[in-house]
Each structure stands twice: as structure tokens, then as C-alpha cells.
Length: 278
Image (cartoon, rainbow, N blue to C red; front, side, top):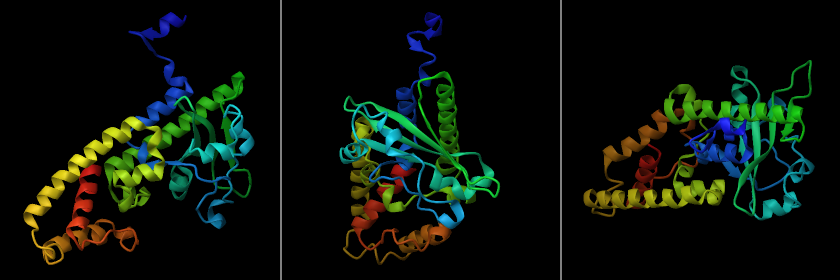
């Protein structure tokens, strides 16, 4: 009975609901790294199609609009109500080491509720099977309902794997897996990229912490670097930054997004970002 599933007012089966699935995922420490606002449709992979199959997603407008309560996909994109959690491009190069790769579309309703509405599971095509993308929605019968739960389990499994490798391990394969850009690790830039306005509590509290860190960093830097050219003339500081880029992130050493360390403003931003992500 329903009453037997309650413990101190908590529904022990509540995790099965779509709304709570989205809330729990947003509550993780990884969401800001991988969820982004959906800016265009159709959804396209950025990977080489000769290696990773055609870039077009099998998620159609018709499937999404079934869950938008009368709103069109174009309108939802215009109002910034659709978000995507895409592990496909991140994990496809490692497909031999894992199972289906999920991509999830979320809808942010006018009542302020974020809900997963479509999940696409995909594998690279093989000589024996050209079909490699399977799209799942919540459904309204027993079979599709349980398949939807399994699809959500795939999303959670991949999320946990990326979280442990990228957030905690930071070893050779973790850095190979990581898709981060240093300049996008700063919270303000990350919130803009991800369309993080739907998590107002995270954004508001996070920006307060970010501002406190930056204020402390600015005070510290000003104390030790009083002259305008003191940052560029500090040989040890410049060597430290070069080591981070060249040795610490050898595979990304030539990326254009590395910030320059040519002024106190640059040092403020670099240190604040590093402390924020530590």
C-alpha cells in the first residue's frame, strides 16, 4: 500500500518520478559541466560522421512536442525552455569501454519545473546493424514506462562515470575524457553557456561564493603585485602558468582558449577559477 512506502513523510518511490529525476541530477556536482541550453534544432553531433555515424539525432520535433503541453519546439527554444544533457559526443571515443551513450532533452515549464522528456540511446553502427539510435519517451503503457526507467538508468550510470573520472580522479584517462575549457570553468561563463537560469538557487548562491573568492584573490594579488608589470616580470609565476598548460594539460596545450597571464586582472581571473573548481 502507498502508506507502506512512506518514511517520515518521504516517498521512497519518489525517485521514479520524472520531476525528481531532474531535480536529483541538478543537485549533483556535475550538472553545470554537461547540461546546456538547446539553441537549435535538429540536434547534431559535432563528431566526425565518418567515424561516429551520421550527426543527426533521431529525436524529432514531434516526439518533443508531445511533452510540451501545446508549445512548439521553436517556441520552447526561443523562450530558452529546452536543455540538453549530451554524453554522446563526450563518451563516443570511449564506446568500446561502456554501453549505450545517452542524450537527454529537458523541458523547463512555465511553472518552474524541469522535466526529462526524451532520451536517445546510441551506439556506433556495425556491419551487421545500421540502426544505432533508439529514442525513448515516458510513454503511457506498462512496456514503454519500464523501458523509460531503464533509459533513465543509463543516463544516471553515464553521469556517475563521468562524475567520478572528471571530478575526482584527474588522472591520464580522466583528463582524456574531460571536455572542459579553462575559460568556461569560471562560474559566470559557465552559467551563460548552460543557460543556468533554471537553477536560480545554484546561480544566486554560487555567484555569492564566486564574488567572495574573487574579492579575496584581488586583495591578495594587490598585496604582492603592486607594480603594473609585476605579473609579467615574475619569472616563477610565468613558469608556473606555463607548466600548468604544457605539462599539466599536455593534450590541450595548444588550445586557443587558455587565458594569457599578462596582467593582475588575468591573475585574478585565473586564481579565482582555480579556487572555484578545486
